[in-house]
Image (cartoon, rainbow over the protein chains, first blue to last red):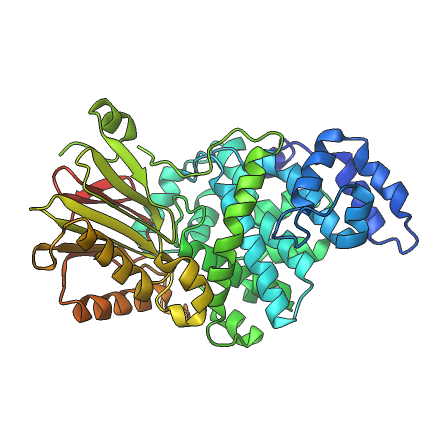
Length: 295
Length: 173
């Protein structure tokens, strides 16, 4: 079996998402959905309900301390937001673990995920070229392939890192050369398995090189720029650090205004602390938020 | 040289590791302390130390200029080089450091691979750092800047040594 096929097989070793995520997603596309019925889908799980209400009452989501029930959360914040939050609560326990191959100590992958989610959402809002909720979700999920490559496959990261150093090539290119695929493609496979909507899977698949997509939607460019900015700042940076190339066509397609990069970084940095604190106290949390030095 | 950033070892030796987050600064005159900041990408980390007074400080600035958001700069001066660095200098002077003896070192200011990234945050952080130092009659004694690697920067208050770690390897600045 080739390494690539072996890796795709390992995608199936990652736990599936809880049923509630799929149910909610189905309801998101149903214009006749009843909110009380939908609330019940979430409320059968008390842990999820508590976590959802903590997030819904955060300053970031804009309803500080005013939301007392799931149904009210759906009414106030909208179904897409609630889906986004439930997805975050369900993915967090997997993403808050240390990711061995990438030297990501506990909670660092998650910190990068949430930072990129917030940056993507901010860019989508400011630029008005993509749905902010989609941008948040795609940003949050873009690096989940690292869970598979770093923890479920015994990929020899030493070889990948040596190749990056010797030839000065980007990390994803070295991944493709050594294992036949990269963490973006693996993430796309995993998200397919999790039945995440296709437009989000596409943004994740091309997050290091949106121009590789024949007809890139703004969502792809937004997630790419957000990822680059969050790496620049160092949120959840592992062994791959900033060892990627920027796709300049992305910036052209988005017609980025001056200062948008700095505005995004400043905006995310304030909200990120609150979000990381919330996730640290939610169910399944076990790791310290602060990156610790390795070796 | 012992591995200063090995937390277990530092603790065995009775040292206190003080972590400095993004957009934060710390100053100290306690020789037991080691100030450390992690994950410097395009951000710039600056250490200052007066060997005679035994006073030092470390700052981790994210962005070059506060004009993009004066409100955030008022709340978190260390977020920006142009507001953070003067605040750091004032704080070590308040603890008894002297400008003429102050040793200033910097790390970070990196960027992604290749010439195409348009934001140039790292490069601009370093430019503003140079300007603020010049205005304050100071210059960099040593630096580890640029490139696509992440850096960890530490200041040992006991010895005044400034240590940079890149890719698992420590070196003295």
